[in-house]
Amino acid sequence: MRVIITKDYYELSREASVVISSLINKKPGCVLGLATGSTPLGLYRELVRLHKEEKLSFSSVKTFNLDEYYGLNPSHPQSYRHFMDTNLFRHIDIKPENTFVPEGNIKSEEAEEYCRGYEEEIKKNGGIDLQVLGIGGDGHIAFNEPGSSLGSRTRIVALDARTIADNARFFNKAEEVPRFALSMGVGTILEAREIILLAAGSNKAPILAQALEGPITSMVTASAIQFHPRVTVITDEEAACSLARYPYYKFIRDAEQKINTPLF
Ligand code: F6R
Image 1 (spheres, rainbow, N blue to C red):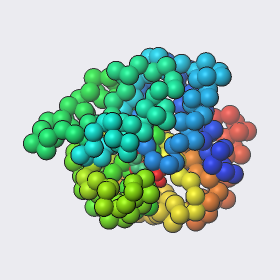
Image 2 (tube, rainbow, N blue to C red; image 1 turned 180 degrees about the horizontal axis):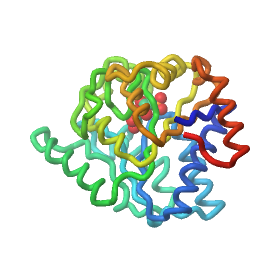
Image 3 (cartoon, helix red, strand yellow; image 1 turned 90 degrees about the vertical axis):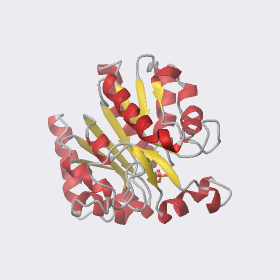
Image 4 (cartoon, rainbow, N blue to C red; image 1 turned 120 degrees about the vertical axis):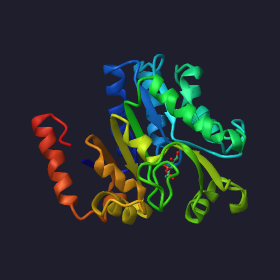
């Protein structure tokens, strides 16, 4: 696992944008897995800048989002579809029909079939080349809350009380945060060919250390990325400060620059 420690959030966002833009330059029709939340906002701003100022084109790129609140219409200001449209898709040349975000307003009796279809759509498009992840305060990736199977697939999940409290900042009050979501599973995420996990801010420090250096456990679903052969964790200094192997990650970063090869 590569762990890149950046001096601040701006640099973190830039590093992440370099991973994505290099992939697009190498494979213009690549399939990206995308996350929402506060952490990737800087990355999306940087991708918009690269599109506008450096002609990075998304015209053949396809995207699949990790999750969506269950019960929200795509037009709801807190829906993840709305988040992606306003923070990224509307500002780049991606084709709307190439952007997939789970639909939050399907009927519960259709959910199983719908989720199976979402996974089939990923496969039909050749699988996810690069998955972007954030990490929740409770260690979740997508909305795979503590206790989710490490083999889980796309499905309806119940949000943990911690996640509801954390995400209340986007709503008028905690009671408005949906209690359920549609989420890719841990098993779905691990099938991506490459993963980048982003973590920023001191409030993520303890859980990031558990996820990267603690045991692999369904109680911290982000720890499952330890199984994956091509993971790059990009973290700012604040989120990295509880990592026991901090000096080693810095050493590896210098070594990579010397031999000009990523060391996973
Ligand atoms: C969002 C998602 C979540 C977030 C996580 C961190 O699509 O999948 O797992 O990545 O909750 O959220 P922020 O970045 O707001 O701290």
